[in-house]
Length: 423
Image (tube, rainbow, N blue to C red; front, side):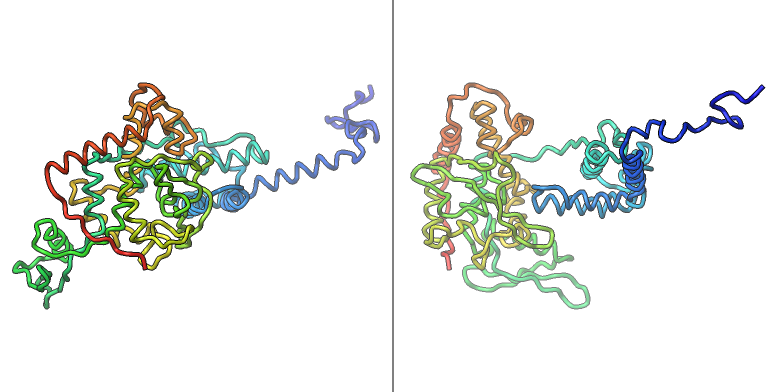
């Protein structure tokens, strides 16, 4: 018997030329072959290379976001997974990578940030570029962050902080010879004196010198322009970049409003970039409580240049205020310690303002507009109860402030301090 038709030497016989499935294609299947070759080559691309390109090709990323993504890649992703080809990445590898991060002391929050970035990169590789068949980042809960509860100040604490920030003791700390400790020199009533106690460390001496301001044992200088800065940031719920970009044009005190249209971003390189706010919803007009308008008028009169485009809050040389030097120049850490809330961050002022706004009973949509949020989840954090959207949030905040001012006027007479005039 002859060999069965279609088989030769135990294998299939290739179809006659011009009769196979590729014959109907003008290029004989060469395009498909080239596509397969490109995909095979793409599968061999290392994660580090693909991730770097991914960041470069993402339109609309803010400068600080770019800096954060590059830092996460350099610090937490590339050292572990950077040399692995896209085609070889697996869920098991990524699970082990995350375990390694946490095992080396990386916080759950930071590990979640790194995981979310990696998941976004590989989502593009799977769904947009078609390099991998599915995203290997499939670990339930790995991208979730559970941020610690941040402190919120009372109205009284906000005013107390506004009065204390910007103070600096008049004095110095001198290290004694042979490591015998540190001694304080301080001014009181214009006369320099030496504190009798010797402190073992410079840090202890510094804390003691700052405490001497509160007890009246030492004189201090007071840069009062930070007072309006604290009050406006809190009661208008402004972000750092938003409040530092405000100009005279943005403040309408007769109408009681502030317009947010720009924001400064300070990059990891120290470069300041002026651009649009964080999101589309962040461009907004926010009501200002009338109770803080006098402080703002005084600040404009004494601390701000007369030009319409003059920055309302500036650094010591008249340029934009920098986040990196704010704590030291303003005595922030000592001020928050003095009001009993050590560790308070500047952003917690916005958190405080949001809490007060939510307590006014405004509806979710109104809260989102005031806060500059474009996602409901963020605003819902602050919404304790909705008692009708017809209440004006600013008026409700004003009642808080006016009540506090009346109580303080009855209790004590605070020294007004001195404002530092604009240069």
